[in-house]
Length: 256
Figure 1: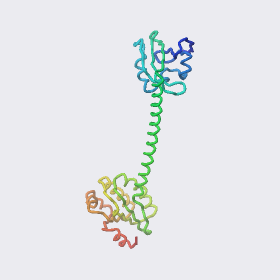
Figure 2: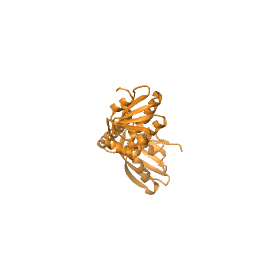
Figure 3: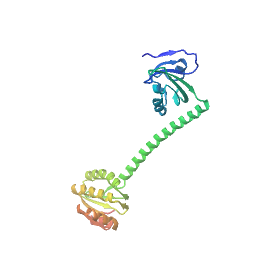
Figure 4: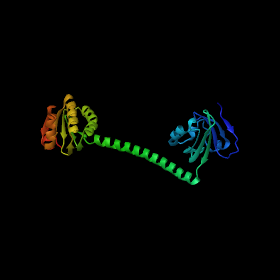
């Protein structure tokens, strides 16, 4: 059904809608104040739409509601909506703005909500940036240093958990593959706590290196980490344990 614009004497926005909320007629005032949407629901703020769906029904016959509506310039205003059903098919809707003071406060709240939404987006972007920095930091926690054509050194720093080991593993395996080193010295002197998941991740990485044919020397491991390595049988993957990095370098006939 094509909508009509009515010229009513009442200087207030009025609408004629059907039970599906489609606008059949609107007053000139309604056309000036609100956007020319086909559905009355499109003029109602999202947070008020459920209330409108619940109460603008023929079985309620006459009802008044307080809702937020969007004006033609995008402003959110608080209004009283008065509804009377002519039949089960059509309803007359009268819209009256609340006091301007309420509208100003509501407008400020709307702007605040928009600012909070923008802030949430900024925080989300900042979180993503920090996560990328953390990931890069984890990857840099075990740099690969070629000591000779056959020997490379990997220094482990800080707490070693599963996430950190998995972050450095792919890059480390690629570097070792490209360098074609036969022997890799892992120096744990500067490492902190090694979690159980971290030990399991190390075991998996050492296994991959052993499959690649690398001999592994583990240096600078404290007693607690050594116990964890023994518990998870880390030593079975072509690994030799040496007390200090200095001794490991001397055994490989390289200098630090």
